[in-house]
Image 1 (spheres, helix red, strand yellow):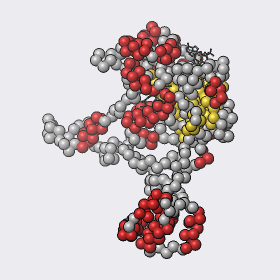
Image 2: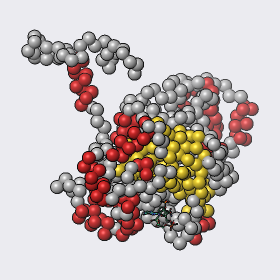
Image 3: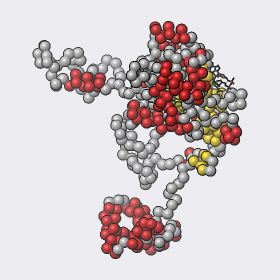
Image 4: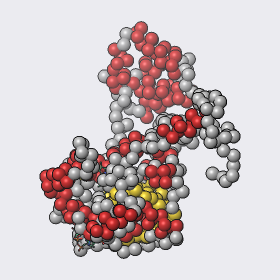
Length: 498
Ligand code: NDP
Ligand code: HEM
Protein backbone atom coordinates (compact mmCIF):
# COMPACT_ATOMS: atom_id res chain seq x y z
CA UNK A 1 0.00 0.00 0.00
CA UNK A 2 1.53 3.34 -0.95
CA UNK A 3 1.83 6.00 1.72
CA UNK A 4 -0.24 9.13 2.00
CA UNK A 5 -2.86 8.29 -0.60
CA UNK A 6 -6.50 9.23 -0.17
CA UNK A 7 -8.72 6.90 1.78
CA UNK A 8 -11.35 5.05 -0.24
CA UNK A 9 -14.12 2.52 0.24
CA UNK A 10 -13.43 -1.07 -0.84
CA UNK A 11 -15.00 -0.11 -4.17
CA UNK A 12 -12.31 2.56 -4.56
CA UNK A 13 -14.49 5.63 -4.03
CA UNK A 14 -12.93 8.48 -1.99
CA UNK A 15 -13.93 8.88 1.67
CA UNK A 16 -14.19 12.45 2.92
CA UNK A 17 -14.99 11.69 6.57
CA UNK A 18 -13.94 8.42 8.17
CA UNK A 19 -14.87 9.22 11.78
CA UNK A 20 -18.45 10.50 11.83
CA UNK A 21 -21.53 8.48 10.88
CA UNK A 22 -24.11 10.01 8.57
CA UNK A 23 -26.98 11.04 10.85
CA UNK A 24 -30.30 12.84 10.62
CA UNK A 25 -29.27 15.86 12.60
CA UNK A 26 -26.56 16.08 15.27
CA UNK A 27 -28.26 13.58 17.58
CA UNK A 28 -29.06 10.90 15.02
CA UNK A 29 -30.47 8.42 14.12
CA UNK A 30 -27.91 6.91 11.69
CA UNK A 31 -29.00 6.74 8.04
CA UNK A 32 -29.02 3.47 6.10
CA UNK A 33 -27.35 5.31 3.24
CA UNK A 34 -24.10 5.57 5.21
CA UNK A 35 -22.55 2.89 3.00
CA UNK A 36 -19.08 3.61 4.41
CA UNK A 37 -20.23 2.67 7.90
CA UNK A 38 -22.13 -0.39 6.64
CA UNK A 39 -19.17 -1.67 4.64
CA UNK A 40 -16.81 -1.30 7.58
CA UNK A 41 -19.16 -3.05 10.03
CA UNK A 42 -19.97 -5.90 7.66
CA UNK A 43 -16.34 -6.56 6.81
CA UNK A 44 -15.39 -6.49 10.47
CA UNK A 45 -17.94 -9.24 11.21
CA UNK A 46 -16.08 -11.47 8.76
CA UNK A 47 -12.48 -10.81 9.87
CA UNK A 48 -11.97 -14.20 11.54
CA UNK A 49 -11.58 -17.49 9.76
CA UNK A 50 -11.83 -20.80 11.65
CA UNK A 51 -8.62 -21.51 13.51
CA UNK A 52 -6.68 -24.69 12.73
CA UNK A 53 -8.35 -27.59 14.53
CA UNK A 54 -4.89 -28.42 15.92
CA UNK A 55 -1.72 -26.28 15.91
CA UNK A 56 -3.88 -23.11 16.04
CA UNK A 57 -1.26 -21.02 17.78
CA UNK A 58 1.81 -20.36 15.66
CA UNK A 59 4.54 -18.17 14.23
CA UNK A 60 6.01 -18.08 10.73
CA UNK A 61 8.95 -16.74 8.75
CA UNK A 62 10.47 -16.98 5.28
CA UNK A 63 13.96 -18.18 4.56
CA UNK A 64 16.36 -20.06 2.35
CA UNK A 65 17.34 -23.70 2.06
CA UNK A 66 20.86 -24.21 0.69
CA UNK A 67 22.22 -27.56 -0.41
CA UNK A 68 25.55 -28.58 1.14
CA UNK A 69 25.53 -32.17 -0.18
CA UNK A 70 23.57 -33.24 -3.25
CA UNK A 71 21.94 -36.67 -3.21
CA UNK A 72 21.05 -37.50 -6.85
CA UNK A 73 21.79 -41.16 -6.12
CA UNK A 74 18.70 -41.19 -3.88
CA UNK A 75 16.32 -38.64 -5.39
CA UNK A 76 15.74 -36.88 -8.69
CA UNK A 77 14.15 -33.89 -6.89
CA UNK A 78 15.79 -30.94 -8.68
CA UNK A 79 15.99 -28.71 -5.62
CA UNK A 80 18.22 -31.35 -3.95
CA UNK A 81 20.38 -31.91 -7.01
CA UNK A 82 23.38 -29.52 -6.72
CA UNK A 83 25.58 -28.18 -3.98
CA UNK A 84 24.91 -24.47 -3.48
CA UNK A 85 21.40 -24.59 -4.92
CA UNK A 86 18.96 -22.40 -2.97
CA UNK A 87 15.22 -22.74 -2.51
CA UNK A 88 12.90 -20.23 -0.83
CA UNK A 89 11.05 -21.62 2.20
CA UNK A 90 8.29 -20.59 4.60
CA UNK A 91 8.32 -22.21 8.04
CA UNK A 92 5.47 -22.16 10.55
CA UNK A 93 6.12 -23.22 14.14
CA UNK A 94 3.22 -23.95 16.46
CA UNK A 95 2.00 -25.48 19.67
CA UNK A 96 -0.51 -28.29 19.18
CA UNK A 97 -3.30 -28.33 21.73
CA UNK A 98 -3.85 -24.68 22.61
CA UNK A 99 -6.28 -22.43 20.79
CA UNK A 100 -5.14 -19.24 19.07
CA UNK A 101 -3.80 -17.00 21.82
CA UNK A 102 -2.63 -19.91 24.00
CA UNK A 103 0.69 -19.31 25.75
CA UNK A 104 3.73 -20.18 23.62
CA UNK A 105 5.68 -21.48 26.63
CA UNK A 106 3.33 -24.33 27.60
CA UNK A 107 4.43 -27.97 27.75
CA UNK A 108 3.39 -29.38 24.40
CA UNK A 109 4.75 -30.85 21.20
CA UNK A 110 5.75 -28.09 18.75
CA UNK A 111 4.82 -28.08 15.07
CA UNK A 112 7.62 -27.59 12.53
CA UNK A 113 6.03 -27.15 9.09
CA UNK A 114 8.26 -26.17 6.16
CA UNK A 115 7.07 -25.17 2.71
CA UNK A 116 9.84 -25.48 0.11
CA UNK A 117 8.89 -23.44 -2.97
CA UNK A 118 10.78 -25.72 -5.39
CA UNK A 119 11.04 -25.24 -9.15
CA UNK A 120 8.99 -28.41 -9.59
CA UNK A 121 6.19 -27.43 -7.21
CA UNK A 122 5.82 -26.98 -3.47
CA UNK A 123 7.10 -29.57 -1.05
CA UNK A 124 5.58 -29.32 2.44
CA UNK A 125 7.32 -31.17 5.22
CA UNK A 126 4.73 -30.91 7.99
CA UNK A 127 6.64 -32.21 10.99
CA UNK A 128 7.05 -31.71 14.72
CA UNK A 129 9.93 -31.13 17.15
CA UNK A 130 9.73 -34.83 18.02
CA UNK A 131 10.75 -37.76 15.79
CA UNK A 132 7.70 -39.90 16.70
CA UNK A 133 3.96 -39.51 17.37
CA UNK A 134 1.32 -40.66 19.89
CA UNK A 135 -0.53 -43.07 17.60
CA UNK A 136 0.28 -45.42 14.75
CA UNK A 137 -3.24 -45.66 13.28
CA UNK A 138 -5.02 -42.54 11.98
CA UNK A 139 -8.36 -43.90 13.19
CA UNK A 140 -7.31 -42.77 16.67
CA UNK A 141 -6.37 -39.19 15.77
CA UNK A 142 -9.67 -37.35 16.31
CA UNK A 143 -10.28 -39.12 19.62
CA UNK A 144 -6.72 -38.46 20.75
CA UNK A 145 -7.02 -34.75 19.96
CA UNK A 146 -10.31 -34.50 21.89
CA UNK A 147 -8.40 -35.64 24.99
CA UNK A 148 -5.82 -32.87 24.52
CA UNK A 149 -8.43 -30.14 24.11
CA UNK A 150 -11.19 -29.19 26.58
CA UNK A 151 -13.64 -31.28 28.58
CA UNK A 152 -17.11 -31.08 26.99
CA UNK A 153 -18.73 -29.90 30.24
CA UNK A 154 -16.12 -28.06 32.29
CA UNK A 155 -14.40 -26.52 29.23
CA UNK A 156 -11.11 -27.24 31.05
CA UNK A 157 -8.03 -29.18 29.99
CA UNK A 158 -8.53 -32.46 31.76
CA UNK A 159 -5.92 -34.88 33.22
CA UNK A 160 -8.46 -37.72 33.28
CA UNK A 161 -9.11 -37.42 29.57
CA UNK A 162 -5.43 -37.19 28.72
CA UNK A 163 -4.19 -40.04 30.88
CA UNK A 164 -7.27 -42.20 30.23
CA UNK A 165 -6.41 -42.13 26.53
CA UNK A 166 -2.64 -42.52 26.98
CA UNK A 167 -3.03 -45.39 29.46
CA UNK A 168 -5.40 -47.19 27.06
CA UNK A 169 -3.04 -46.63 24.11
CA UNK A 170 0.49 -47.65 25.11
CA UNK A 171 1.81 -46.89 21.62
CA UNK A 172 1.81 -43.29 22.91
CA UNK A 173 4.51 -44.04 25.52
CA UNK A 174 7.51 -43.09 23.39
CA UNK A 175 6.03 -39.68 22.51
CA UNK A 176 4.69 -39.15 26.07
CA UNK A 177 8.24 -39.76 27.35
CA UNK A 178 9.61 -37.04 25.04
CA UNK A 179 6.72 -34.69 25.89
CA UNK A 180 7.44 -34.89 29.63
CA UNK A 181 11.24 -34.79 29.15
CA UNK A 182 13.16 -31.52 29.09
CA UNK A 183 12.34 -31.16 25.38
CA UNK A 184 8.62 -30.75 26.16
CA UNK A 185 9.38 -27.14 27.16
CA UNK A 186 11.55 -25.58 24.42
CA UNK A 187 12.93 -22.16 25.41
CA UNK A 188 11.99 -20.83 21.97
CA UNK A 189 11.21 -22.03 18.47
CA UNK A 190 14.82 -21.25 17.53
CA UNK A 191 16.20 -23.64 20.13
CA UNK A 192 14.58 -26.91 19.09
CA UNK A 193 15.01 -29.51 16.37
CA UNK A 194 12.44 -30.40 13.72
CA UNK A 195 11.64 -33.86 12.41
CA UNK A 196 9.63 -35.03 9.43
CA UNK A 197 8.83 -38.02 11.67
CA UNK A 198 7.24 -40.16 8.94
CA UNK A 199 9.21 -42.31 6.56
CA UNK A 200 8.91 -40.77 3.08
CA UNK A 201 10.08 -42.14 -0.25
CA UNK A 202 12.88 -40.96 -2.51
CA UNK A 203 12.93 -42.01 -6.17
CA UNK A 204 16.08 -41.39 -8.24
CA UNK A 205 16.41 -40.82 -11.99
CA UNK A 206 16.91 -44.56 -12.56
CA UNK A 207 13.51 -45.24 -10.96
CA UNK A 208 14.97 -46.78 -7.77
CA UNK A 209 13.03 -46.21 -4.56
CA UNK A 210 14.47 -45.59 -1.09
CA UNK A 211 12.79 -44.75 2.22
CA UNK A 212 13.97 -41.66 4.08
CA UNK A 213 13.42 -39.56 7.21
CA UNK A 214 14.22 -35.85 7.58
CA UNK A 215 15.86 -34.19 10.59
CA UNK A 216 16.41 -30.45 11.18
CA UNK A 217 19.04 -29.87 13.89
CA UNK A 218 19.02 -26.42 15.47
CA UNK A 219 22.28 -24.51 15.02
CA UNK A 220 21.33 -22.31 17.99
CA UNK A 221 21.65 -25.35 20.29
CA UNK A 222 18.87 -27.12 22.14
CA UNK A 223 17.62 -24.91 24.99
CA UNK A 224 14.72 -25.84 27.24
CA UNK A 225 12.83 -24.24 30.11
CA UNK A 226 12.33 -25.85 33.51
CA UNK A 227 8.74 -26.20 34.71
CA UNK A 228 9.25 -23.19 36.96
CA UNK A 229 10.82 -21.06 34.23
CA UNK A 230 7.95 -21.91 31.92
CA UNK A 231 5.32 -20.89 34.52
CA UNK A 232 7.14 -17.61 35.19
CA UNK A 233 7.56 -16.86 31.50
CA UNK A 234 3.88 -17.49 30.75
CA UNK A 235 3.01 -15.13 33.63
CA UNK A 236 4.84 -12.26 31.97
CA UNK A 237 4.72 -13.09 28.23
CA UNK A 238 2.20 -15.36 26.58
CA UNK A 239 3.70 -14.71 23.12
CA UNK A 240 7.29 -15.48 24.15
CA UNK A 241 8.14 -17.67 21.12
CA UNK A 242 6.49 -15.34 18.59
CA UNK A 243 8.37 -12.40 20.10
CA UNK A 244 11.68 -14.29 20.18
CA UNK A 245 11.44 -15.38 16.55
CA UNK A 246 10.18 -12.06 15.14
CA UNK A 247 12.70 -9.96 17.05
CA UNK A 248 15.67 -12.21 16.28
CA UNK A 249 14.94 -11.96 12.56
CA UNK A 250 14.38 -8.19 12.79
CA UNK A 251 17.81 -7.90 14.48
CA UNK A 252 19.39 -9.82 11.60
CA UNK A 253 20.14 -12.76 13.89
CA UNK A 254 18.87 -15.38 11.49
CA UNK A 255 18.13 -18.79 13.05
CA UNK A 256 19.23 -21.83 11.09
CA UNK A 257 19.03 -25.61 11.11
CA UNK A 258 21.25 -28.29 9.62
CA UNK A 259 19.10 -30.53 7.47
CA UNK A 260 19.91 -34.24 7.56
CA UNK A 261 18.39 -37.40 6.15
CA UNK A 262 18.37 -41.06 7.06
CA UNK A 263 18.00 -43.45 4.15
CA UNK A 264 16.80 -47.07 4.18
CA UNK A 265 16.77 -49.37 1.15
CA UNK A 266 13.63 -51.34 0.25
CA UNK A 267 15.51 -54.52 1.19
CA UNK A 268 16.52 -53.09 4.59
CA UNK A 269 12.89 -52.12 5.17
CA UNK A 270 11.81 -55.72 4.64
CA UNK A 271 14.17 -56.97 7.34
CA UNK A 272 14.04 -54.04 9.85
CA UNK A 273 13.25 -55.35 13.31
CA UNK A 274 10.20 -53.08 13.62
CA UNK A 275 7.76 -51.88 10.99
CA UNK A 276 9.85 -49.07 9.44
CA UNK A 277 6.63 -47.17 8.69
CA UNK A 278 5.44 -47.20 12.31
CA UNK A 279 5.25 -43.53 13.37
CA UNK A 280 5.83 -44.40 17.04
CA UNK A 281 9.37 -45.62 16.23
CA UNK A 282 12.62 -43.96 15.18
CA UNK A 283 15.24 -45.51 12.94
CA UNK A 284 18.25 -45.82 15.30
CA UNK A 285 21.07 -43.48 14.32
CA UNK A 286 23.61 -46.26 14.80
CA UNK A 287 21.96 -48.34 12.05
CA UNK A 288 20.76 -45.53 9.79
CA UNK A 289 23.26 -42.67 10.17
CA UNK A 290 22.26 -39.08 9.57
CA UNK A 291 23.56 -37.57 6.36
CA UNK A 292 23.79 -33.78 6.11
CA UNK A 293 22.24 -32.34 2.94
CA UNK A 294 21.75 -28.64 3.62
CA UNK A 295 21.20 -25.61 5.81
CA UNK A 296 17.84 -23.97 6.34
CA UNK A 297 17.95 -20.33 7.43
CA UNK A 298 15.04 -18.05 8.36
CA UNK A 299 15.77 -14.49 7.32
CA UNK A 300 12.55 -12.60 6.55
CA UNK A 301 9.52 -11.80 8.69
CA UNK A 302 6.08 -11.82 7.06
CA UNK A 303 4.59 -8.38 6.40
CA UNK A 304 1.10 -9.39 7.44
CA UNK A 305 0.48 -12.09 10.02
CA UNK A 306 -3.07 -12.94 8.94
CA UNK A 307 -2.33 -13.14 5.21
CA UNK A 308 0.91 -15.05 5.45
CA UNK A 309 0.84 -17.06 8.70
CA UNK A 310 -2.85 -17.58 9.47
CA UNK A 311 -3.69 -18.36 5.84
CA UNK A 312 -0.59 -20.51 5.26
CA UNK A 313 -1.66 -23.99 4.23
CA UNK A 314 0.78 -26.89 4.61
CA UNK A 315 -0.01 -30.39 3.47
CA UNK A 316 1.94 -33.65 3.65
CA UNK A 317 0.42 -34.35 0.20
CA UNK A 318 2.50 -31.64 -1.54
CA UNK A 319 5.42 -33.53 -3.15
CA UNK A 320 7.72 -32.62 -6.05
CA UNK A 321 9.00 -35.43 -8.33
CA UNK A 322 11.55 -37.60 -6.48
CA UNK A 323 9.88 -37.37 -3.06
CA UNK A 324 6.69 -39.21 -2.14
CA UNK A 325 4.71 -40.94 0.56
CA UNK A 326 5.47 -44.23 2.30
CA UNK A 327 2.93 -46.84 3.41
CA UNK A 328 2.80 -45.23 6.90
CA UNK A 329 -0.94 -45.35 7.70
CA UNK A 330 -0.92 -42.05 9.59
CA UNK A 331 0.81 -40.30 6.70
CA UNK A 332 -1.67 -41.78 4.24
CA UNK A 333 -4.57 -40.28 6.23
CA UNK A 334 -2.82 -36.93 6.51
CA UNK A 335 -2.51 -36.75 2.70
CA UNK A 336 -6.28 -36.27 2.58
CA UNK A 337 -6.91 -34.43 5.84
CA UNK A 338 -4.90 -31.23 5.34
CA UNK A 339 -6.19 -29.99 1.95
CA UNK A 340 -9.70 -30.81 3.18
CA UNK A 341 -9.16 -28.76 6.34
CA UNK A 342 -7.76 -25.88 4.30
CA UNK A 343 -10.65 -25.82 1.84
CA UNK A 344 -12.90 -25.41 4.88
CA UNK A 345 -10.66 -23.11 6.93
CA UNK A 346 -9.30 -20.80 4.20
CA UNK A 347 -11.43 -21.52 1.12
CA UNK A 348 -11.56 -23.54 -2.07
CA UNK A 349 -8.85 -21.52 -3.79
CA UNK A 350 -6.44 -21.30 -0.84
CA UNK A 351 -3.56 -22.34 -3.12
CA UNK A 352 -3.91 -19.09 -5.08
CA UNK A 353 -2.97 -16.97 -2.04
CA UNK A 354 0.58 -15.53 -2.26
CA UNK A 355 1.99 -17.49 0.71
CA UNK A 356 0.72 -20.79 -0.68
CA UNK A 357 1.28 -20.14 -4.37
CA UNK A 358 4.04 -22.22 -5.96
CA UNK A 359 6.91 -20.19 -7.42
CA UNK A 360 6.74 -22.26 -10.64
CA UNK A 361 3.97 -22.25 -13.29
CA UNK A 362 0.76 -23.97 -12.15
CA UNK A 363 -1.22 -25.73 -14.91
CA UNK A 364 -4.32 -27.77 -14.27
CA UNK A 365 -8.00 -28.11 -15.09
CA UNK A 366 -9.48 -27.25 -11.70
CA UNK A 367 -11.68 -24.20 -12.13
CA UNK A 368 -13.81 -21.61 -10.36
CA UNK A 369 -15.04 -21.85 -6.77
CA UNK A 370 -15.32 -19.10 -4.19
CA UNK A 371 -12.80 -16.28 -4.61
CA UNK A 372 -11.32 -17.58 -7.85
CA UNK A 373 -8.93 -15.09 -9.39
CA UNK A 374 -9.79 -16.44 -12.83
CA UNK A 375 -7.26 -19.24 -13.04
CA UNK A 376 -7.13 -20.75 -16.55
CA UNK A 377 -8.45 -17.67 -18.33
CA UNK A 378 -10.05 -18.62 -21.64
CA UNK A 379 -8.11 -21.88 -22.10
CA UNK A 380 -9.94 -25.25 -22.10
CA UNK A 381 -11.35 -26.42 -18.76
CA UNK A 382 -11.36 -30.15 -19.62
CA UNK A 383 -8.81 -32.83 -20.46
CA UNK A 384 -8.01 -34.47 -22.84
CA UNK A 385 -8.54 -31.75 -25.42
CA UNK A 386 -7.32 -30.92 -28.92
CA UNK A 387 -5.73 -27.57 -28.04
CA UNK A 388 -1.98 -27.85 -28.63
CA UNK A 389 -1.34 -24.89 -26.27
CA UNK A 390 -3.24 -26.36 -23.31
CA UNK A 391 -1.37 -28.15 -20.46
CA UNK A 392 -0.38 -31.74 -21.24
CA UNK A 393 0.66 -34.78 -19.21
CA UNK A 394 4.41 -35.24 -18.71
CA UNK A 395 4.96 -39.03 -18.74
CA UNK A 396 8.68 -38.58 -18.01
CA UNK A 397 7.70 -37.89 -14.39
CA UNK A 398 6.07 -41.28 -13.95
CA UNK A 399 7.39 -43.10 -10.87
CA UNK A 400 7.72 -46.88 -10.43
CA UNK A 401 4.83 -48.89 -9.02
CA UNK A 402 5.00 -49.94 -5.38
CA UNK A 403 4.90 -53.70 -4.79
CA UNK A 404 2.53 -54.54 -1.93
CA UNK A 405 2.63 -58.33 -1.60
CA UNK A 406 0.89 -59.80 -4.63
CA UNK A 407 -0.32 -56.50 -6.04
CA UNK A 408 1.45 -53.41 -7.29
CA UNK A 409 0.12 -49.94 -6.52
CA UNK A 410 0.32 -48.01 -9.78
CA UNK A 411 -1.70 -45.92 -12.22
CA UNK A 412 -3.14 -48.59 -14.53
CA UNK A 413 -4.25 -47.48 -17.97
CA UNK A 414 -7.99 -48.03 -18.26
CA UNK A 415 -7.97 -46.71 -21.82
CA UNK A 416 -6.65 -49.90 -23.48
CA UNK A 417 -9.98 -51.72 -23.17
CA UNK A 418 -12.48 -52.74 -25.90
CA UNK A 419 -14.69 -49.66 -26.19
CA UNK A 420 -16.47 -50.76 -29.37
CA UNK A 421 -17.96 -54.27 -29.25
CA UNK A 422 -20.86 -53.57 -26.92
CA UNK A 423 -21.70 -50.21 -28.48
CA UNK A 424 -21.79 -52.10 -31.83
CA UNK A 425 -23.89 -54.92 -30.35
CA UNK A 426 -26.44 -52.38 -29.21
CA UNK A 427 -26.48 -50.72 -32.63
CA UNK A 428 -27.10 -54.08 -34.29
CA UNK A 429 -30.20 -54.83 -32.23
CA UNK A 430 -31.77 -51.46 -33.07
CA UNK A 431 -34.65 -51.59 -35.58
CA UNK A 432 -34.15 -49.78 -38.89
CA UNK A 433 -36.22 -46.87 -37.61
CA UNK A 434 -34.30 -46.57 -34.37
CA UNK A 435 -30.98 -46.67 -36.27
CA UNK A 436 -32.15 -43.77 -38.43
CA UNK A 437 -33.49 -41.79 -35.46
CA UNK A 438 -30.27 -42.35 -33.49
CA UNK A 439 -28.05 -41.37 -36.42
CA UNK A 440 -30.16 -38.25 -36.96
CA UNK A 441 -30.03 -37.32 -33.25
CA UNK A 442 -26.24 -37.76 -33.19
CA UNK A 443 -25.83 -35.76 -36.40
CA UNK A 444 -28.00 -32.98 -34.98
CA UNK A 445 -25.75 -32.73 -31.91
CA UNK A 446 -22.41 -33.38 -33.65
CA UNK A 447 -23.00 -30.88 -36.45
CA UNK A 448 -22.25 -28.09 -33.92
CA UNK A 449 -18.68 -29.38 -33.38
CA UNK A 450 -15.58 -28.56 -35.44
CA UNK A 451 -14.95 -30.77 -38.50
CA UNK A 452 -11.79 -32.40 -37.11
CA UNK A 453 -13.75 -33.39 -33.99
CA UNK A 454 -16.62 -34.70 -36.15
CA UNK A 455 -14.17 -36.88 -38.09
CA UNK A 456 -12.53 -38.24 -34.92
CA UNK A 457 -15.92 -39.17 -33.49
CA UNK A 458 -17.08 -40.69 -36.80
CA UNK A 459 -14.11 -43.08 -36.66
CA UNK A 460 -15.46 -44.42 -33.36
CA UNK A 461 -18.90 -45.08 -34.88
CA UNK A 462 -17.27 -46.95 -37.77
CA UNK A 463 -15.16 -49.00 -35.36
CA UNK A 464 -18.30 -50.09 -33.51
CA UNK A 465 -20.18 -50.96 -36.70
CA UNK A 466 -19.65 -49.94 -40.35
CA UNK A 467 -23.36 -49.28 -40.79
CA UNK A 468 -23.41 -47.12 -37.65
CA UNK A 469 -20.62 -44.93 -39.07
CA UNK A 470 -22.14 -44.76 -42.51
CA UNK A 471 -25.56 -43.67 -41.28
CA UNK A 472 -24.16 -40.93 -39.05
CA UNK A 473 -21.84 -39.73 -41.85
CA UNK A 474 -24.77 -39.61 -44.23
CA UNK A 475 -26.90 -37.71 -41.73
CA UNK A 476 -24.03 -35.22 -41.43
CA UNK A 477 -23.68 -35.02 -45.23
CA UNK A 478 -20.05 -36.18 -44.98
CA UNK A 479 -18.61 -38.18 -47.87
CA UNK A 480 -16.27 -40.87 -46.53
CA UNK A 481 -13.26 -41.78 -48.63
CA UNK A 482 -13.34 -45.64 -48.86
CA UNK A 483 -9.51 -45.75 -48.55
CA UNK A 484 -9.74 -43.93 -45.22
CA UNK A 485 -12.40 -46.37 -44.07
CA UNK A 486 -10.20 -49.30 -44.88
CA UNK A 487 -7.29 -47.66 -43.04
CA UNK A 488 -9.49 -47.07 -40.00
CA UNK A 489 -10.43 -50.75 -39.89
CA UNK A 490 -6.80 -51.85 -40.22
CA UNK A 491 -5.57 -49.46 -37.51
CA UNK A 492 -8.30 -50.52 -35.15
CA UNK A 493 -8.97 -54.21 -35.48
CA UNK A 494 -11.78 -54.12 -32.95
CA UNK A 495 -14.46 -56.80 -33.35
CA UNK A 496 -17.41 -55.35 -35.19
CA UNK A 497 -19.73 -58.27 -34.84
CA UNK A 498 -20.98 -59.88 -31.68
P1 NDP B 1 21.07 -42.60 19.67
O1 NDP B 1 21.78 -42.61 20.96
O2 NDP B 1 21.84 -42.77 18.44
O3 NDP B 1 20.20 -41.26 19.49
C1 NDP B 1 19.88 -40.50 20.57
C2 NDP B 1 19.31 -39.23 20.00
O4 NDP B 1 18.33 -38.82 20.89
C3 NDP B 1 20.29 -38.08 19.97
O5 NDP B 1 21.04 -38.09 18.81
C4 NDP B 1 19.36 -36.91 20.04
O6 NDP B 1 18.85 -36.68 18.71
C5 NDP B 1 18.19 -37.45 20.81
N1 NDP B 1 18.10 -36.98 22.17
C6 NDP B 1 19.07 -36.69 23.03
N2 NDP B 1 18.53 -36.27 24.20
C7 NDP B 1 17.20 -36.32 24.05
C8 NDP B 1 16.11 -36.00 24.88
N3 NDP B 1 16.29 -35.57 26.11
N4 NDP B 1 14.87 -36.15 24.42
C9 NDP B 1 14.66 -36.62 23.16
N5 NDP B 1 15.66 -36.91 22.31
C10 NDP B 1 16.92 -36.77 22.77
O7 NDP B 1 19.94 -43.68 19.81
P2 NDP B 1 18.71 -44.03 18.88
O8 NDP B 1 18.85 -43.51 17.51
O9 NDP B 1 18.46 -45.46 19.08
O10 NDP B 1 17.56 -43.24 19.62
C11 NDP B 1 17.29 -43.46 21.01
C12 NDP B 1 16.16 -42.56 21.40
O11 NDP B 1 16.54 -41.22 21.15
C13 NDP B 1 14.90 -42.80 20.57
O12 NDP B 1 14.09 -43.78 21.13
C14 NDP B 1 14.26 -41.45 20.56
O13 NDP B 1 13.43 -41.32 21.67
C15 NDP B 1 15.41 -40.48 20.70
N6 NDP B 1 15.69 -39.84 19.40
C16 NDP B 1 16.09 -40.61 18.34
C17 NDP B 1 16.17 -40.05 17.10
C18 NDP B 1 16.43 -40.90 15.90
O14 NDP B 1 16.10 -40.47 14.79
N7 NDP B 1 17.05 -42.05 16.04
C19 NDP B 1 15.89 -38.62 16.87
C20 NDP B 1 15.59 -37.90 18.08
C21 NDP B 1 15.45 -38.53 19.28
P3 NDP B 1 18.77 -35.25 18.08
O15 NDP B 1 20.13 -34.81 17.81
O16 NDP B 1 17.94 -35.41 16.85
O17 NDP B 1 18.10 -34.38 19.09
C1 HEM C 1 -2.04 -29.30 11.48
C2 HEM C 1 -4.62 -33.35 10.95
C3 HEM C 1 -0.87 -35.98 12.52
C4 HEM C 1 1.89 -32.02 12.35
C5 HEM C 1 -3.08 -30.17 11.25
C6 HEM C 1 -4.38 -29.81 10.76
C7 HEM C 1 -5.09 -30.94 10.60
C8 HEM C 1 -4.26 -32.03 11.00
C9 HEM C 1 -6.52 -31.07 10.08
C10 HEM C 1 -4.83 -28.38 10.47
C11 HEM C 1 -4.49 -28.05 9.05
C12 HEM C 1 -4.94 -26.68 8.64
O1 HEM C 1 -6.05 -26.27 9.00
O2 HEM C 1 -4.18 -26.00 7.91
C13 HEM C 1 -3.83 -34.42 11.32
C14 HEM C 1 -4.23 -35.81 11.25
C15 HEM C 1 -3.18 -36.55 11.72
C16 HEM C 1 -2.11 -35.61 12.06
C17 HEM C 1 -5.58 -36.30 10.75
C18 HEM C 1 -3.04 -38.03 11.89
C19 HEM C 1 -3.96 -38.91 11.51
C20 HEM C 1 0.22 -35.15 12.55
C21 HEM C 1 1.60 -35.58 12.70
C22 HEM C 1 2.37 -34.47 12.63
C23 HEM C 1 1.48 -33.34 12.46
C24 HEM C 1 2.03 -37.04 12.84
C25 HEM C 1 3.85 -34.33 12.71
C26 HEM C 1 4.70 -35.29 12.47
C27 HEM C 1 1.05 -30.96 12.11
C28 HEM C 1 1.51 -29.59 12.03
C29 HEM C 1 0.38 -28.81 11.78
C30 HEM C 1 -0.76 -29.70 11.72
C31 HEM C 1 2.94 -29.10 12.18
C32 HEM C 1 0.34 -27.29 11.63
C33 HEM C 1 0.71 -26.89 10.22
C34 HEM C 1 0.75 -25.41 10.12
O3 HEM C 1 1.67 -24.81 10.73
O4 HEM C 1 -0.12 -24.82 9.47
N1 HEM C 1 -3.02 -31.54 11.41
N2 HEM C 1 -2.56 -34.33 11.81
N3 HEM C 1 0.18 -33.78 12.41
N4 HEM C 1 -0.32 -30.99 11.92
FE1 HEM C 1 -1.42 -32.66 11.87
